[in-house]
Length: 487
Ligand code: ADP
Ligand code: MG
Image (cartoon, rainbow, N blue to C red; front, side):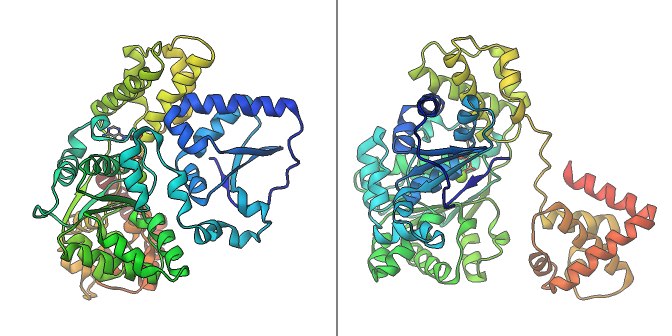
């Protein structure tokens, strides 16, 4: 795995070596080809190389937001461009320039730039390709938008029909129209198109002049809020938020901190009560947002909650085609034969990000080596993106349902406080499965089993772990349940 180290004091020597400079120039051109001109000039044009040390490359950017964005979206890309030049590179580190120059203590480095100049990042991150939409969006302090993530590039399939329809409806609404579902809550695993859909709504919604659609990552909501609080200006920030027609918050699972959450709750209530649309995306359903308090959770669950499932093979194939078509706008000679597309759609099952990565790699490879794309080359280039089948996302409710059926008890028996043997064992098995098949914490599992304490869950997990080591028929039962839940 790649590691992106932030805000480490960099120990590198200044770059005197001409060959390293040349490498940096080549890395930048690889990156430019890989991400395309628009993205490159938005995000990477101001990235500087600081030093190369052993296995790590140290680079700098001028703002915290550039750093976070590059970190969350392009780490692998940057790393692989470096590795193509210098195979021994294992890590890339991106830090914020001004914070380093001022020799700020490491702890302070991250928020410092934003708090002092809360207005800067939005201006600096303007997406050049669509200036008018982006300018009004930036003026509101929105998070950066990727010009490629629009409805026209979003491919519909069985897994996202409903989410797509709901998003379209939101995008096409007019100021003053009654709001059909509020909030619209979209959840899906990583790389399944949440951000794409949300940004598509933002682009489309903002194209009508009398409507303001604001797209914020949860992180930006927090930074914006913290910055405003520090500047004693939280009222202005709240007012600005309330002045918009559609508020879109991406990656809600990252919203942390009591004050922020209670402000989020106020904002949510104020917007919804005023008939403004709120759209939220998260990697899990509202009931699984462990750190949010119950009121926010139920408010979030009170609108339309839509899940986007994994990308089917047909959808993957269409996404690949659309990516290739997009790449051909700038690289006319780029051809990907049908058997290669088929191979990629079959082999890369994991998520959309990997599909995009695969196309970019083929493009980079064929450009830099002036070679046509072949099946053999594709197999070689994307080898690391081909992963074993991802286990299905298992939900606690499903576990409870399947276990209850298996042991012939009811789901409410499992959640109840009854302690008769015929209920205790299935309950323990269900808690155990919740621990091993989901990423939920012990307290969360306890909460979902009728408000039990986390120690009770821990006890159940240990108990079943110990028993399956000795009791073969129980081990078989548990194995069978696992298989039912994961197929
Ligand atoms: P998420 O936010 O859910 O993690 P993204 O929206 O960032 O996922 O999607 C990851 C990549 O997959 C992006 O390049 C996106 O354009 C692409 N993608 C995912 N779903 C679709 C789709 N239905 N149509 C076109 N591209 C898609
Ligand atoms: Mg996303």
